[in-house]
Structure formats: C-alpha cells, structure tokens
Image 1 (cartoon, protein in one colour):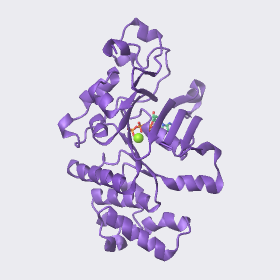
Image 2: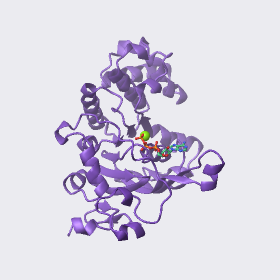
Image 3: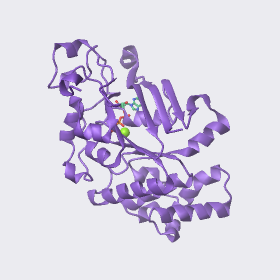
Image 4: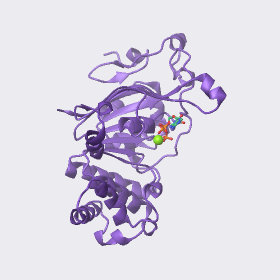
Length: 322
Ligand SMILES: Nc1ncnc2c1ncn2[C@@H]1O[C@H](COP(=O)(O)OP(=O)(O)OP(=O)(O)O)[C@@H](O)[C@H]1O
Ligand SMILES: [Mg+2]
C-alpha cells in the first residue's frame, strides 16, 4: 500500500474551563481535517500559532484521541486497536517536539534516556546498548558521550539526542513538531539536513509541522495550510509554491522569511488564535482582502481545483481559470 497515514474528517473539541466557557460549549480546535501521507515522503503542516497543528498531530498519534474521525496507519484503523496491537503501532509512530530541553530528563544520563523505551519493549541489555550507540552515531553524537547529562550538550545536540531517542524505537513515521524553531538560526539548517538524510537512510515518513511556510516548502513533498482548525489549502509543494490560491496561503508567504533564506527562522505569528465561533461564512473573511458579500454567507468547502490541489475559497476559480 502506498499511503502510510490516512486521516479522515478528524475533529478535536475542547471544553473551556469555568461556567461561561461551558455554556458556550465545545470549541473545535481541529475541524474535519483529512489528508494522506505517502510512504517515504514528507508532509508539511503549516499555519499560525494556535491554528491546531499540534492538536492534529496528538490526535493522529492517539496521544489525545480525536473527538471523531479516523486515523489509518499502514491500513489499520488506530481507534479500533487496543493493548498489544495498539502498542505495536505506537512504536512505529514517534514524535519529536519543539523544545529538546523539556523533552529530556535533566537528571538522566542521555544513554539511559535512550534506553527507556527499549526497556519497555523488553529488549535485552546488550541489544539496548548496541541500539543506543548506533542511533547516537547516526545523529552525529559521539556514542561514548552517553554517560553525560543533557546540560552538557548544546541545543542542537540535544535535539539530535531527542531524534536519536525516537529512532531507537525503529519507527516508520515521525511527527516533527516545530523541530528547529527553538534553535539558533545557524543550527537550524544542520538539523534540517540531518532529518532529510535520516529520512533517506532509514526510509522514514515525516509529518513536518511549522509556522514557516518557506521552511515547510523546503522540506516537504506535499503541504497542507491550516487556519483556525481547518485545512484551507492542500497540494504538492509545487502547487502551493507556484500557484498558491487561498488568500491566507499568500499571506503566509509574505509573513515567512525570504524565499532564499529558507532555512532561517521567523518570529512566531501570534494572530492565528483559534477558532472563535463560526458565523456561517468563511472563517477567514474578516482578515481577507478579497472578501465580498458572498464570503460572509457561504462557508467554503475544500474542493479540488485540479490535479489534487484543494482549496477552501469560493473565489478559487477567479485565480485559477483552469
Ligand atoms: N488541552 C487543551 N485544552 C483546551 N484547549 C486546547 C488544548 N490544547 C490546545 N488547545 C487549544 O486549541 C487550539 C490549537 O492549539 P494547538 O496547540 O494545536 O495550535 P498550534 O497550531 O500547534 O500552535 P503553535 O504554533 O503555537 O504550536 C488553541 O486555541 C489552543 O489554545
Ligand atoms: Mg504547536
């Protein structure tokens, strides 16, 4: 089978705290999100802070199960699995978070941190040590440094160690949630190149999450643009880069650092704060410079404007006559 990950109509609702929030009811942090990730490819998920990227990834991995919708991993419906079968699939799906400092236990030697997951899997001590050494080597950390503590490493090295720890589980799929945005600009390119190299060497599949569209475009084969819990545009990197249609995608381009500085960071946009209650029209209308009266009434569906390029804008044809 070609697709490693398929998500269908994923919804994640949260209830706010307090009486007022409860009266308002649930708020959809993720609203009917669907996409597929082919084996050995990188799928990029991009959008402003608070648009729901992390929530999608946590629901996808069943770390925080979706309110509704389906996740298929290598053909199996994750929500229907339990016990040993679920653990087996979980091992194959690993996540690397933004901040390597909170990901590593400061009181634990890094070698022990890397061994932890393997102990849970019942891997023998000699096998564990071998795997830990191999993985450290693979990410460019001297294996004999496994007796050191996290604070003895730089930020970039710590992120390498976190990647190595995910790899000890021999996953097929990695979620990379803003894996370089906490690192110095000079280190970001090294980590991105390491991730690209590991993907080839180990035949991995990635979900790469970032608020920086140019960085996502640099690394990904396909891209989904999220706005307030929904996908507003999805296509191949070529389609998104060369023929972006949704006004929000265009705005992200202008917010992202220069195209040629693809590996440079950007300040995190804070304005995508999630999903107020929908008023029935296009959720982006209030910010859109192409808005007309129809936009305030019709809620645009995500539709195919040609060759699998999906756009949720009622004015899609205007910009793409094909
Ligand atoms: N456990 C939770 N309970 C309530 N609300 C939550 C919870 N987790 C996330 N949210 C809300 O859901 C929305 C989406 O959050 P999420 O963390 O997925 O965004 P994000 O796109 O990953 O943002 P960032 O780029 O800042 O990481 C936000 O409004 C957030 O406040
Ligand atoms: Mg996030």
